[in-house]
Length: 546
Ligand SMILES: C[S@@+](CC[C@H](N)C(=O)[O-])C[C@H]1O[C@@H](n2cnc3c(N)ncnc32)[C@H](O)[C@@H]1O
Image (cartoon, rainbow, N blue to C red; front, side, top):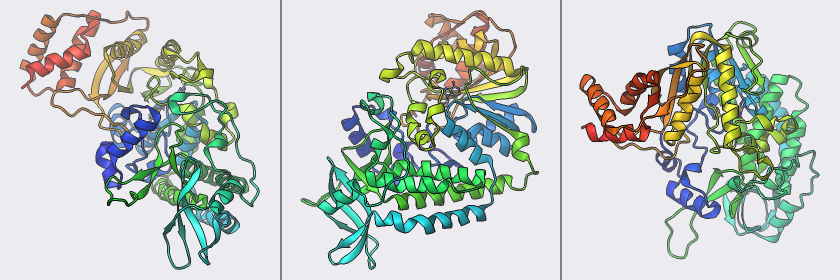
């Protein structure tokens, strides 16, 4: 499976990339590279639930194979949805995952636990029998002399402007919105069960306004449907199967919310309204000016289909393992990478992909999920390695970010066995980020081993394919020497020397690409206490490579 650029993938799914970028930028004042779309690029286990910043699993498995033997322990102390752990378990390694985000830990656990699929399907039938008719009744009324079921409502400035519905004869009909649509959505006749009203952090960067709550992301009708499902899931006795359904619910939330934007085709006949298509949750908590409200039962049923596909893959992978394979091989900790509850020298390999400054606000953006699971009250916001502009998180600045990342590196150096390897996914932005990151490794006693470009992750929008240009996603691998407290490396600005060094390297290895040259240079110069600026390396390489 290859990972493609968003602009290659979206048209394939009938989506117009430029149109989306334009629309999002206009309404949110954001840059294209901040956009994250759920592109369906992932399949099976990895398509069960959205998570921010998932890494390409096939790439990660190569590192696990290269740096570990079967039975050895792989740690990811920023494990997110658990891609590293799943790949480690698949390759018969043991794994330890740590993440501050309760949703991430639950997702990782479900993704590695084989459950009885017949029982999952049976539970879905129970929920269907109990709730489908009630939830659909929130969308049913007589229109034009026949019973109709509303599947999608397009709202613009709080008015229903277009409604898609089905009848006994037809699967999809379209009409204009009417007053009944407002009444049914705003004043549903069924009473809601519990739903979260947790306050969100005000943060214009992810479009969260003052005093906004999680409930504000949904219509009252959607809250009724979702709260009924949530209440019913509590009756499932088997905790593993209950977790599968909890994730089905959280996986349903975004499509059932007001965050689903309307894709308008660009081409249209004169006078005719451009055709609308269903978009997805694109960015932060942006409620688009024109957005969908989708029938909650449909959203839940569709999500369940994806979850079942994932469950089938999980069963194929793990159901024939020995009893207790999970308990013996997997350890998940909802805690902080800065305080690992692990013994010294107990890990054989570390692969991490920590948050990149303010790029994706993991905990803030996961609040919708955690709040519905009732897990938001226990979140340890203070230890999040992040830069946030949220008004109530003023302390989450670059200094705090660097300090926490430093603590996380100290912990890795403590728990990783001497002579073993530590890889980190890294998104290079500029020279300063490069030197700061290299110094994190160096000062914690790690020795540079290898730097390789990572193939596109599904969410990387901006990539540079020009010859000799440096891609932005890398994996940096270092060896644990336990030689802590080494001097930081510094920049050396000597273009003449740099050019001479590059010429020497290229004459010995004419086949080298930019990143090979960079590796060779780092290996030579770091022991001497300096590095050349990466931007200069790229420039001089471009000038000297044919
Ligand atoms: C880039 S994501 C990891 C994504 C993961 N590689 C995947 O494939 O899903 C970074 C993760 O770091 C977590 N995180 C942030 N601060 C943390 C901390 N102090 N300790 C543990 N995890 C933390 C976030 O919750 C987020 O899940």
